[in-house]
Length: 408
Image (cartoon, rainbow, N blue to C red):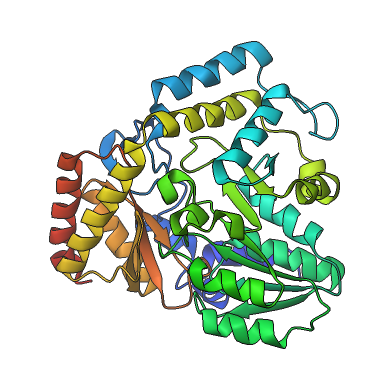
């Protein structure tokens, strides 16, 4: 069999697509005009985009604080570009560390209330590199069943490279977590990994229940705050939201959401961060974050401090939309944040509903397995501090009409 047969078949043959978990093949969906991915955006103005000459309201972005077009943020990026050029052309380990990288790490650590931080070139790399670097063969990795793909792959790396024991607990179920911790060998090192805010459901990890369990059983806790920073705890994340900053051992964050850039970081005690500098392979063997991206995040930290109303606004928008969508009868699961899923279940019906919304001028995202559990396909909507009341009115009115039209 040719290695590429499955690739060609997946594109052309519904039977092959079904074998890999999809209801039909991409070519068929494209011919129907319903393929919801890789849509080129011609103009982006934060809350609105232009696609094929048509203006749509954007409710599919992680730009929670609306900072991608903030004048101060853009100007700082331009200044860094002029001063340093487009790239450092090297790893942080070698020639890729600028003074501004160190400044950013110091400020990020202070922002989340920990001793030190390490900046990676993508958010995915943070988990992919840090998790395997932290564990040894005698250790146990324990994660929530719905953690982000970067954590899943970091855990796979650790299991494959070091034969680490891996356990999964039921989503946000502290009792199930305790049963797993209680069964772990006392002499094993234990790392519990959760998302602060879950990227598909918009729900929050119950840290007040998880933290005491980690302390009781001698486990360390890593909280992935990719979708929490800029949203919870005055923008400082899940631990700050619950008043548990000193109790969370490691905080991971990304820059591609509220920080209007790309990249990510891990924060923790200084000795652990130094360990990651030496042993996290994606950090060691990747070119460092470009200067303009670093400057963008530094500017975003300034704006969050100077304009705290943005954090309050994005949460107020989220609360309004959650309340009204529930009132319309939409299944929005247990969302507690500006990430609000519209759970439909069936793949094709989810895609059809996305197309109806798209044609009505609303851009949202389609989440299908394996990004979500089987039979749990959904539209992932997310909101920004810069959405106006008039725009939210239009969005909600469209959802009222679509509810009847799509029968969801």
